[in-house]
Amino acid sequence: MPHHGHDEEHDQHEEPVSFQDKRRIDPETGRVRQPQDVPAEDGDALSQAERILNDAAGADAADEGITGAQEPDVAGVSAREEELRADLQRLQAEFVNYKRRVERDRNVAKDAAIVSVISALLPVLDDLDAARAAGDLAEGPFAAIATKFDGVLAGFGLERQDQEALGGEPFDPSQHEAVIRQPSAEVPEEHIVQVFRNGYVREGRVLRAAQVMVSAGAEG
Image 1: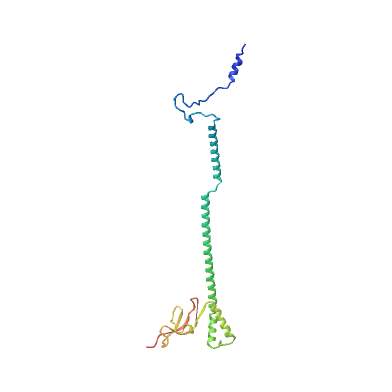
Image 2: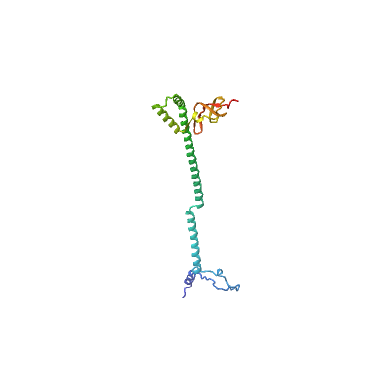
């Protein structure tokens, strides 16, 4: 006697049957189906290739994201480099200007010191000139010392404006001090006749004006 109950249990455990319509002609419309209209099986080669391509594209996108995160910002680095270069050039220019100012200040201080020493020695030079005019320095050891002393001062740019240098030269009120004016038939008017006290000039700067007699021209 057949056991119908057992057959019914067996039928309940059977998997449902499914199928895919792979026909190229749509039975309802009669048109040729396009490839995208035809369902693809999971094991279809086209589907597998599509999945591989999609996976590869996703991997490339991820790699590009990682690479982009690791690559430096070239534009930002270039801008920073230009900024640092500009700062360096500015500092170099400031340093050059600083060196020039220091050198200029050093020269000014040096000149001021030389002028100060020479100005303090002018009375000594007057005494030597007086002794020389009196004939006391014509010869002997003091004459040699006076000559060396004049040479040292000349090495610092000092120029003596004495009778030899100014006699007969035009009178210049910016460099000479007119003590007296006197008619002279030999010296033209407004020219120096005689130097009473020597003057001294250094590099165009008058340290002391020479005291002179100025010609008033020939008596008329």
